[in-house]
Image (tube, rainbow, N blue to C red; front, side, top):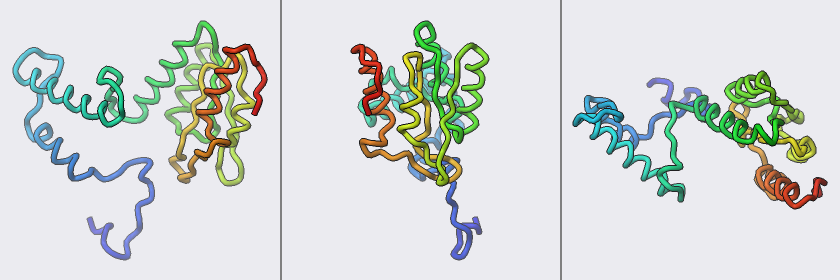
Length: 191
């Protein structure tokens, strides 16, 4: 751990990985040091593992104001992206087959979009400005009646840029309003 001593480089890639919080390490310690079991099994170790996972799921749900059934644990970001993007796209496939993303998305997102393109979806990649920022207005302009999903990262994992969260640049709010306009028969962007 000499890299953390004074004068050593400062780690700025927390979007990729972070040190384990000591509280998390303490909570996980019993499972990493022998208290394991297949949570799908009906034997004593499996039941204990299932109870622990259910307890953790309830904690996360409470913290997020969600129900336990809405919480899905994955092995990491790539798996989570695959579940979310493929699930959202396929759930709308009968109605819409257009996906909007940015040219600077993480490869885990770009690859799943490429996979969906091979399954009949059209993909629009929004460019970025000289600072690596996505223009929310450009993303909104790319939306059509066929748009099923807009998947653009909030924070860039390479340079740390964050998509603005002010009303004018709040892409999720703008996409929601666009969808509402479509439902109400207003096909103009109106922004």
